[in-house]
Every structure is written in C-alpha cells, then in structure tokens.
Image (cartoon, rainbow, N blue to C red; front, side):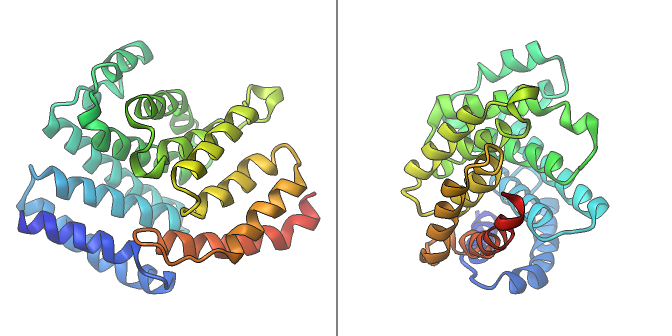
Length: 260
C-alpha cells in the first residue's frame, strides 16, 4: 500500500508540474524508481498501472529518438498487460489473437475493470504513436479502436472522456477517400470536451490538428487554438498537459497560414 501510494503521489506531482522541462529532466529518475517498486511488488496492480502511465506519457511526449521511445512505450504496454493478467482480464492474452477472439474477450470486461482496460489501450496506442512506418503496429488500429469503444460503452466519463479523445484521433488518421471518418472524429472530440468541461486543453489542440486540418476548416482551427492560448493551464491533474497544449497551440497557429 505504501509503495502504491508513493507511485500515485509521483504521478500526481508530475501531472501538476507547470514546467515541462523540469519533467523532461527529472522524470527518468521517477521511472527508475517505479521499476524498483514493481520489482519489489510484482503483483501490485496499482504500481503496474502507474508505471504504465508514466512510461507511456514520457515516451510519447518527451522522447524524440524513435528507438528509445519504442522501448519505453513497449515497457508501458508490458506493465499494463501485467496489470490485466493480475486482474484476471482475458484481454491480457487475447490482444495478440484473432480479431474475433479479441472482440469476444472485450465483451467480458466489466465496468469495474475500465481503469485496467483504458490504461492498456492508451499504452497500446502509444506504441503506434512512436512507431512511424511500422505497419505491424498500424495493423492493430482496428483492435485499439474496438477497445476504446468498449471503454466508452462501459464508462465514457472515465479519465474525463479520454476514450473519446483517442477515438477522435483514430477516426481522423485517414482522409475520407481512404475510409476515414472525420465527422465521427468531430463527434468524439466534442464529447471529450464536454465531459471534461473544457478543462483538458489538449482535447482542443487535437481537435484542431486532427479534424480541423483534415477538413480544411480554418475558422474552427483558429478558434479552438485561440481558446487554448487564452485559457488557464493550472488545473489539478492537468497542469502539465495543459501547459504543453498551450505551447502546441501557438505552434499550430503560427503554421496555419502555410497549411491553409
């Protein structure tokens, strides 16, 4: 319990940090500490989940070297999978099996297991995010989409609607001519923003980058980003991600003239 509480405290301290460079420099020490906690408490699901979240976030946000990011993202998935197995959730084995077997196991997941399923899905999506050009990883997109849809069906408000955010991104990865679903993407982003009451600024940044740019909606694009820039980043549990969102919003706005 002490180790689990410490892991949660470390995660909270990072999420509430308003200086991303401090996190970039200091988080690796926390990652090593989490590894040690997991080694001493291999069956503690709370520490496994915390380790997965920290490794996944650091890999996708701060690591620019692709091979290093992939190693960290894979560790995030490994920790999340171990948590699934400790919990007895069959997805821990079925995710590498056929789509039908995977879909069947997802239907067995109960509402009490949303935290485990969502953390695993987030880590899985992280691998795709850091693996540009890896077609094997990209081939898993239909399974990840189905997993996040299951999270939505069980509890769409979990993590302030985070599953809707993932589905918004996943639905916009391809243009309509290649099977993309931009309007489905828009619905998911709007739902995520509504559930989080606009407090998670990254939702609006992703909405602008993945939907507004895809359909060349300059008015929506600029309005969303201006809202992010003028918003207060200091929100409990979201300060770091909001600070990063404001930085990215400025970058997207500065490149809008060339894009549109």
